[in-house]
Length: 588
Image 1: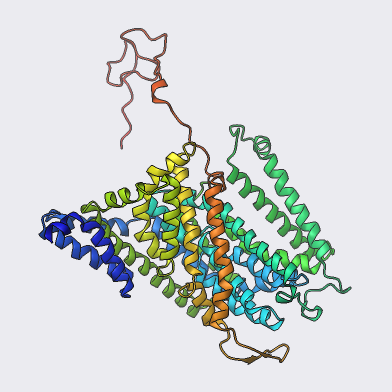
Image 2 (image 1 turned 30 degrees about the vertical axis):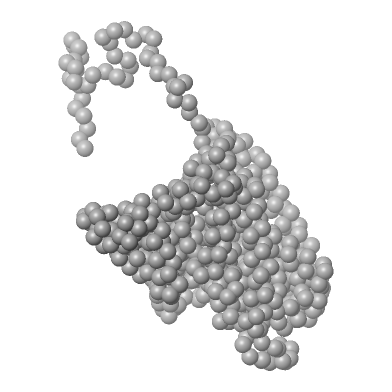
């Protein structure tokens, strides 16, 4: 029996962890307890050295000194302040009025605002609760199918999982040992492709089941011109001018830099061109709206002006956070700090800040940050013992011997993450699964994609798993986004304040069935990321490959034996005749 335990301690340890989690123990303490127990067992059996746990304090201090993890409280605080500052309410009201005349307009507005909130907050709970409180009553009031309404709100809220600045991408980058900035760049396009897939699903419903997603009635469209028109034409002209400016700047970016005096730039990175061109387009629209309001020339309609003033603050905040990260001006931690300060400034400008709001935001931020740190400490204790018993080698042999090679590895890993997401959230999955899968993926995936650099390949792997883990928020019956929506959805029949009609409650079954199509869409997105890795790697840039065998070192031809090349004179040599003493070296 003892020999069996010694030979199979790694799989026994992993199985025991699963049992711990299934019994409902807190994940952080389950990980730590499992690691400590099997560590002492390994020491008693002579598998592990008695000094094993002496390395634990240094690892824990390393966690506490990890600058990357500082971005988590910053982005959490930013999201909570924005959620309470009324930005989500203004966005949903204005965008709902904009898309209201269309079938499915409110659902399109929820998806659009969900993407905007994801790019500014990065917190799923804040997005789902805000949109559930604001949009769900309006959808129920005007006859939306309850499954569609609840599904689109929950799914749009989970976009905060994959669209930067996402918390899961920070954890993923830390566990894979990659740059958070690169992870953000890699997830940028897949995040908005997923948003487009959501919108495409609503479009299909609007075409084939129009009674499920009716348009807003005329009396519900409050933003109108004095002549009774909608003002959409003016907004279309403003959008065309802004997009035209962005396209022009993007296509002529290097020329504009040269015209401004920066002749050293021959080819600017794609992400830099996108950020700068979009920022200039946003500033142009804002300036035009300000001129229109101050001079009252009537250049823009009320709708165009309202949309511009509502969209500009979150767009500027996106540039402040993501723009500075993509341009290399700030690290993700510094970008998070600027985002938190910008969110606080926006809340002050809206006069929505008080001591109670700050206490709530800081209290929730502290709780989430402690939650993350405790799970990370627990996973560190577990991984210390697991590595000591050669657990990573067992996992590597298990996964590399799968039929199908790299393709089989990807299928098994995605199925495993999809199933575990029924029971664990993305923090727990990231800290338990990613450290085991990362080294194996780095070896196997290079055989599948030999032309992609290792760094870009691991970023692609992380983004793929991030999209898959997004389903952990949508899985019935344990999806957290469904729980958030259940907490704010009406559980009893009530009287609508506007129409005075009796509105039936939203059942838990309707919320679950509404989530199923969006879970399928998320899995389709995983397939797209696997089939088209350039969706992730296109913005990362290619690392130049250097052939060591062809590296040559050449000395200057005119340097004679015994003399020194220019700039290589001996600083301690005596001065030549007639020359002054060499200047002393500057003090440190």
